Structures are given as structure tokens and as C-alpha cells.
Image (tube, rainbow, N blue to C red; front, side):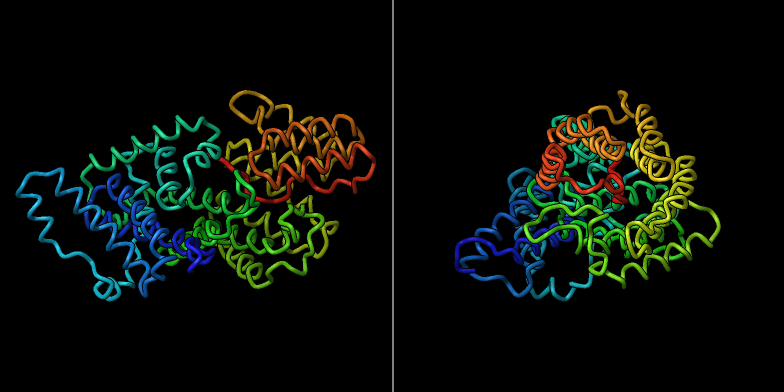
Length: 429
């Protein structure tokens, strides 16, 4: 690390540690907004000092120590003499004392804290994506399909609401936890989505996000092992993440589901995911995550793309539509309809989504329409929609794939279109 900048392993470690450090600082000082600022300062200090001085033996303890000092300095400058002295007398966590409590992981508590009952569901989700997921405001705004400035204001208000509530930082009671559970699961779903198919930037995947989402969902599942929807969400993540090794080529380019080398899929994750969702579906009530996991399992269990049981997938989407009024579910349902009944029938289904309040102007709608037009033989229209989709996405790998698809189709060099989009969980908010 003598080059003056962090290596990739250290950068990934900082991203992994950030929510855990934030949870520890909030636990101690109670001020969400100030704690987040202090942790950001600690992360910057690490980025500057670790390449020069070497990584500390206890990176998490080092970050907590630096953030705690920043908080103490702020309290000393902002509060009256009595409070200054009281906080100054509090012992700062040393690497040794932090190591003694290193088994304490506050990330799960932070997750439930961000899903505070005083917040609207959308604000709770946005705040958690920022604090726990580490997403930028622009990435969160993209997930919610709102302007970045609007999202920045929403997150700021959420922090102030939590601060004003006076609720102590800690795991909520069982009744309170039940009230927050839906928002918690939806946040984990969105964090995983952003990691599996990054909405912005040069990389198709942000593995650290998807892995953290899986880790946290496992923790929630351990907390409530009998909950079918938690098991369904974990199964969905595992079944989807199992395909990750085959999703990109040597240069990071996107490889669609139909063209993936399925021998690269993680058989262990698939087996675990299938077992989880099978047990959950036998448990009685069926929820949206269980159904999405069941759909992912059908895809994963097909040895070849052409062996995919699309009638079964369509039947599952019919049930899912009855439980979730979501334009992404409708879009995926249209794909399944096209694969069973033909592209023209699928195209007719898309018309209901091309309206304000649904997916009008969204790149995913244009991309699916392009795929179905290609399958229907209308190459000129397909090229136009591929290009429109490429113009609308902020993901460079997706843009390159869509642009290449249009170019190859224009010269008659495109391979036959497979199923459009594939079973990646849809972004929704």
C-alpha cells in the first residue's frame, strides 16, 4: 500500500465496514446525522493514512476510534461547558477495547433503526439505502425514479425525524420489529438489486452490495427463522446471485441469460435457494418474495435456456400480479406472456405500462419492447427501441449491450433474440 492510494481490497473493506462503524457510533452518541458525518470523515482519514502508515490490526476499531474523536470534538465545540466536560470524560474506544467487543455488529440494529415507524415507507427505505447500503443519493433517486435533489431532501428529513423522535438506538421490541419488517425486507431487496445490476456507472455488478444484502438477510432469517417471506427473500437472492459468475465476459460486458454458460452457475447456492423456497411455500401463506424466488428457481433448474418452463413461470407471475401492484412485475409478466403466447401478445401487454406513473420513458420498457419487436421480425422498430433504451440507461455495460444489439441487428448479424431481460429482480420503490 505504498503507492499512496488504497488497493481494491482495502476499498472493499471500507465499504463493508462503513455501516457497522456507523451503527456503533450511533449507539454511543445517538445523533444519526452527526454520526454519519463523523464516519465519513473517518473513512476519508483511512483513505489518506492507510496507504502511508499501513492498515491497522483492527480496521473497524480504528474507524470507530477516529469517528468517536470527531464526534467528541463536535460536542466540545457545540455544547455547554457541563456537557462538554461530560462527553470529554467518556473513554474513547481503543483498538484493544474495540477488539474485546468485536463480536458486536450493529448493522442489523442500524437497519431496523432506519426503518423507524415515524418515517414514511419511502423515506425509511431511502435512508437505509444510504446508511446501510452505502448507495449514493443519485443511485437511490434512480431506484425511486425521482430527481436527485428530491431524494437528498427526503434523506435529510428522515435523519432529522429519527433524531427528534428520541428513540434510543437498539433492536426494537418484537411488536415494533414486526411493524418495520416490510420496509426492512424491501430495503434489503433494493440493496441486492443495486449490487446485482448496478444502475449507474461502468460496472455491471457491485458485488460488495449484493453480498452485504445477503449477509443481512441471513441475519434477519436467523432472527426469525419461521417467517416464510424472509426465507423467500433470502432464497431469491441466492438463486439470483448463483448466476453472477456467468453474467459478464472477460471485459466486463453483459452476457444475457440465454447466452450464459450455465456450468458456471453456483450449484451450491441454487440448491440452498431451492430448499429455502420449497420449505417456505409449504408453510402456508404465500408472499411476493416467495413467488419471485420460485420463478428464479424455475430458471435456475433449466439445464439449457430452451428448456425453461415458461408456462410455469407465467402461472407464477399471474399469482404474483394479484399480490403486488408493481409496474416491474407487470413488465416481467409481459415477458412471460410473450414467451408462452408469442411476441405480439406480449407487445400488446406493454401498452398499459407506457403511461405516467408506470414505466413511460424507462429504459427497461424500451429494452423489452425492442426484444419483442426483434422476435416479431420488425427489425427497424427494434433498432429504434434498442437505441432509445441505450440512451436512457445510466449503466455503461447495459448501454453497450443495447447499442451493440442495435448495431448487429442493423447489419443482419444479430443472433436470435432470447427471452428479454431475464429473471433479474426488478427495481421498484
